[in-house]
Length: 157
Image (cartoon, rainbow, N blue to C red; front, side, top):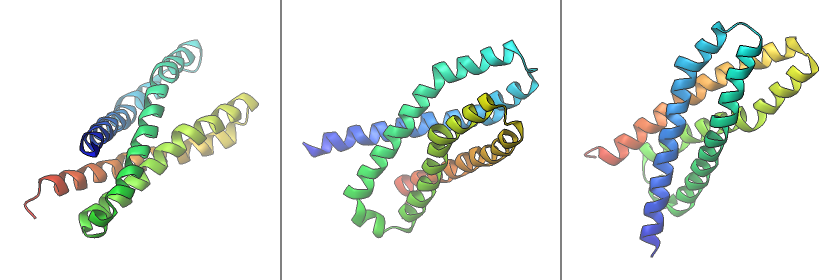
């Protein structure tokens, strides 16, 4: 009975990982550069509202499910993780990725909204600089997590 539950958990984990990775790539390579070119005003606010209203809840759910399944695998497969250097790498890079993504989606989104509402533009600029680096961190470490999972599952070792 546990086998099919683990199969479902693996499927959800992979699906949410792909969803998060695609989102990070699209945001970094398409959305952020495009939003930077839109002048401040109603058009930019409407574009941001579409992204926040439609896509953020999906990504929030993916981060939560990815974290839950990762914790499940961490507890259930502890012996396997301890025995493999590749899984050590995957767990470490995965923790960094999920921490960065969680901070971006569940903490800094609220901080930015509060700073913008209070008109604290200098602090907002500093937070934006930091979150830009955090987005790149999530993207790079997410890619390393994917590569280590791919290598672990498909290497002849």
